[in-house]
Structure formats: C-alpha cells, structure tokens
Length: 529
Image (cartoon, rainbow, N blue to C red; front, side, top):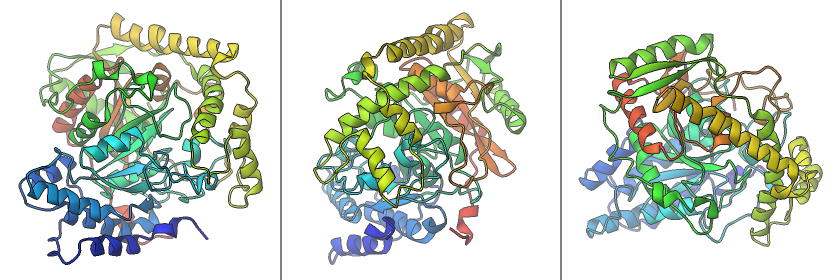
C-alpha cells in the first residue's frame, strides 16, 4: 500500500471540522493567490478566521493535489490549531503577524507527532518527539503547522541515476506544465507555494534545493546564509551547506517567515553568530531600495542562455529604471568549485546522517548510512533505485578530520569566497550580483535516467552560481522574472554573508516594479498521474 493515504485529506478535513465542536461554521475564504501578508491583515481586522483559511487550503489540496503529488500528509489537528489561534485573537492575545497562518513543511523537517521520512521508507516510522527548531519557532509564533510536502528522496542525495521525487510521495509535477519538472529537492514546497496550498512553505537547500524549485514554480525563495536559520531536527546532507529557508508568492511573505525563523540556537553551534546578524527583514522592504545601488551583472553562468536572455535583459532594464547602476562582471569571475563540493558532501553526509539517525525513535531500525544502504537493497519499495551516492559516501573514512575533506573544504571556501564572490563584490564595488536563476523547467525523465546532479557535474558545464553560493555559505534570493513559453524563470540576487536584509529589499523593489509572477493554471486541468 502506498504510504500517502496514511492520513487522507478527506479524513483530515473531517477530523478538523469535528474539532470545532458545535461552533458556528467559519465563512468561506478564497485563498488562491492571496499573499500571506494579506491573510495576516485580514485575520487582524476580523475579516476572516484561521479556521476558514485553514479549511480553504485543505479543500484545495483535497481537490487539486492528485495531479501534482505535492502533499505527503496533513496534520490531523490542523483545524484545531487554527481554532486555538482564533480563540487567542478573540481574547486579544494574538502571538503576532503569523498567528493563525497555515504553513507547509518539506518532509525532511522534524515536526512533533508527524512522520518525517525524507521521502524514504527507511524512515517510515520516524515520528519525532520534538519539533525541529524551525517548526518550533513558527509554532511559537502561532503558525498553523499544516502538514508535510514532497521532496526528492534524501534531498536528492541517494542516486545519480534519476529518481523523480520520492518513493513515499511519488513523482511531483510542475503546475505550469504537468509534463515538466518542479525541480528538487524542495519540490513539494515549491509546488505548494505556487498553487496556494498554504500561505507559504519551508524548504531546505544544500546545492540549489530551494532556489531551483522557486525558479521552476514561479515563486520567491530565499536560501539564507548558512546557519542564520538553525538546522536542528532537519534530516541532513551536510551541515557545511544545509539551510532551511522560506518560500512564498511574494518577497514580503518570505521576509515575514524569516523574521521568525532566523536566530541562534545553542543546539546548532554553527549558528552562534546568527543572533548578531539577525534583522527585521520586513521593516527593511522599500520600493526605492534599488535607487543608487551598484549591482553586478553575471552572464555566462549556468542558466544564462537562449531561454533566459530576453527576460534577463528586460529585468536589467527594470533595475536600471528603478535607479540601480549596473556593472558588467567579466565571465569566469566565479571559479568552479564543483569538484570540491562533491568531496565535501560525501564526507560530511556520512558523519551528519549517522548523527541524525542515532537520535531518531527506536522504531527506526536504520541507525547508520550502512544500514540505509542495506535497507534500500532489501526493501522492494526501494530496491528498484540505486544508492550509488550513498555507497560513495559510506566508503569515506574520517569525516571532517580526513585530509581529503579538509583540503576540499578549504579550497572550496577559497574559490567561492575570497577568490569568488568577495573578490567580485569588492573589486567592482557592487553591493549584490544578479543573474538568471536557471532555465525553464525540463521535461520529466523516466526514473533511472542519468542526471547532472551536483555530486557529478558534467565536464565543461557552466559554473553554477547557485551551487557556488552554497559552497560559500552566502545568501541567494530568487524572484519571478517572467515566463518563457509558458514556463517561469527567476532572477537571482546574490550577496555576501548575512546580507539577507539587503537582498530582500532589492528583490522587493524589483518585484514591485516588475510584477512578473504569473500564477499557474495547467494543474487545474484533469491529467493522468
């Protein structure tokens, strides 16, 4: 039996309605394309209730997800959470702008009482007893923890032979064209944000897993500076590069989530400096933010090509029209560190996944990477896919103390930081860089098709600005740039460490001037799964 029906959407909706008791039914609220910020304002003004909003999202998922495979499960107490938020507001005790706002989470983010599978049956019984830091903070701000959404299995880090989506969540589809890829690994987060299955979503990124789905699904996505958002309770690839980040339909919505998500956590020592750099990202938003700013223009990176050139030139015109001074950056200014990235991820994955598995409930029988490989080979629900990345990682010895890891880590940082983004920002006296995020979504390939995953970048491939920011640990924001033949592409804003406030303000000014998001419609048409 497929794992998906363990909490059917219809049953969840009934459970939620029952939780409301005999209270007056909430008046319907149309959520499609309504920004999180508007929902927040409507809740504050008494124009709607969290129960009405939550029920509207559940109904959309129940009606529209079958052709998308975005949703893994809905929290059984979602409507109950919403009712509690309404009660707080009624008593004048609202917890802030996110109180009563429904949020969906990628299925590698621990959520108390809900299974966290990372798309694999090896974690079928992984029901965390504690929230991840990200979920804990959003729950503490009153957000309705609406449920879990699909992901590339193990965040895309199991096989180079192609596995569209996950065995648990099946293959996801792009809402602009169901034959196209929504990109990974935060595929469900990208789809769900794009089609209004929640007010916003949370994804994770190691080598482009927030940025890629944001590009392909026509939404705003932010990959923050490494450890601005703590990674405690997130199924890892590598603490060197993993980052949770907000995904939504507007820059303001993304900033509202980051205000709550950002900050240090003693349980993630890497995040020690986060509090010192945290800002009020919403307060920084201004339509005039581009005025007088020197912006570097990156061409020739991966994603720059025939499909994106016209839209990119149009976007540059918007930036210039808003008062930005554009500075051309010579091609080749960002060195290629993909070889170093491969080594970093293989060594750190073994160490970090073993640490995570050791802390899972006793019902999870796979306690090491070696166990996961054995599970994949033995379980008929998993054995049809290879585990070559797992196997390569399991062969490594010494973790972060290994000389090969140390050399790759140091070289990767040198190439992307001192010899890369830092050098370009300094030498050309620019505050940020822009480039096309990626090309439009590609046609979904059959499982087993060799992929150009970051772990094995084809020789001669253009340098990826997305991967380079991950190795550097620097922030990266993607904002819709328009449609190419009906498929969205994004405009990337890249800056130095801890520059989220700047990037969000620049992205906001561009968004307000360009208005380039076009909602998808293809997903509303009946289609084969």
